[in-house]
Structures are given as C-alpha cells and as structure tokens.
Length: 283
Image (cartoon, rainbow, N blue to C red; front, side, top):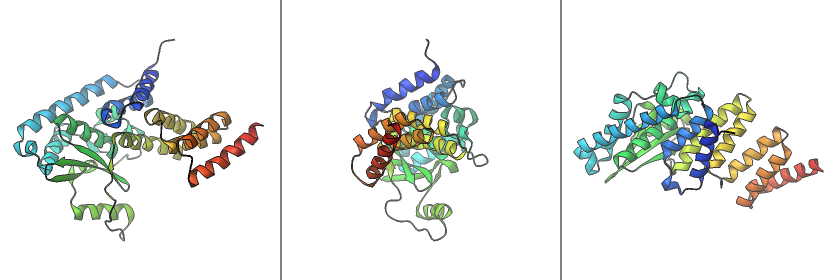
C-alpha cells in the first residue's frame, strides 16, 4: 500500500524526534505537523514561501550595517520590515481560535496566525540571516527574543513585530493576568526548538479538547510524541485520553511509558494508582 502524505509527515516527525534540539529545522518540522492536519493543502507552496522569506531576510540583513554588526534593535526592525511589511504577516485577532492559525501551511496562505506560528516565521528568518533568536515562554503570550552583541530585543510578533521594553512588558502582563500583576523574575523563559513546536501543537490539542474532539486531541498528542518521545507529561496525557476513550491497553502502554521516563514524584504516584485500577479492569 502506498504511503499517504500523513504517513510521510509522521515519518519525518519521528526522524526529527531522534535529533538533538540544535539540529531540528524549526519551520520544516512545523510544516510536517501542518501536513498531517491539512493533507490536501499545498505544502510545497508553503515550503517555497518559507524559502522566499529566508532569502529576503538574508538580503535585508546584508544590507543593514548596524544589524549586521550586532545591534539587536536594528535586527528587530529589519525582520519586522521583511516579515510584516514585505510579506504582510499579521496576528489573527478576529478569529483567534481558528485551528488554521496554528497550521503553518494555512498561515503562509492566509498571512495570519497565532503568536507561536508567527514566531516560527521569525525564528526561521533570523536563523537564515545568521542571527541568534529564541522563543520566549511569556505567560499566556508567545514572544521572540532577537539576540545582538549588546543584549537582546524582545518582540511581540503578534503585534506586527513591536518591540517590548519594561513598560510594554508590564502592560502586556496586566492585560493577561489582571491589573495587579507585576513583572517578576522568571517571566522571560527562553525556549528550545522542541518546546516551540510543542507549544504550536498544544494550541491545536487544547482547541480540540474544548470542542469535545477527544480522538482528535489524542491524535495530536501522539504526533507531538513523535517529535518529543521522552516527554513524560505527553505520555500521561495520551494515557488518560485513551482511558476516556476506553482503550485500556493503549492507556496502560502510555502510562507505563511515562513512569519509565519519570518514576518519582506526585504525578508518578497518581499515575500508578490509575494504572493499577486499569489493570484490575482488564482482569
């Protein structure tokens, strides 16, 4: 039987799952996730769009002496001009919960997306330009940090590439957590590539759960595990979803795998109790 586009994409995810984080091609892996959810979409056109974005970023970086010399703020301005003005990418504020906003193929078609999807475009362009950049796990809102020789520039990619100094960060935090929220240590956690990709897919998983599509949420979790096979939390989630779907054998397999990875702690204690109850149901 011939392989389907989804089979090919899942094989590519599994291959990426064996790579060290630094060797993962962020946008390429995001495209494989997108192929699974939109198998009839033109993923090659999306790949071409990503290549064009990278080429423009390279040209713009070479043409800006300050950015090339390491000025982080100039680097932010250069990438803002390329991604948001030249190519027209923007945050989708009107249909924020649309699943297409987390699908990189659809994002390249519609020029709209969630913060983390737009962030992947930023990280892709920055890497092409030869500049270090990282996803930032800010509470409730994905940001990007563009590095320079003298510090970094924080970027709200959902707001058209706006720069964020302390006053803007404080205002953003208050919008998310309420007026009493204040900046505190640990708010700006840098993310590795896997974490960025898992955050992208987590948006899909959570939206499927909210809509009652438990089987779809489980499929999304299983695809995330192809990229991150050592994530105990994902194995626990897959196990509990299988349990709710009355797939007891599959649930036990997932829960046991989570315990192999993370055998100690409160979560492990609870999972052992669930697994013991499931084994009694099989007897």
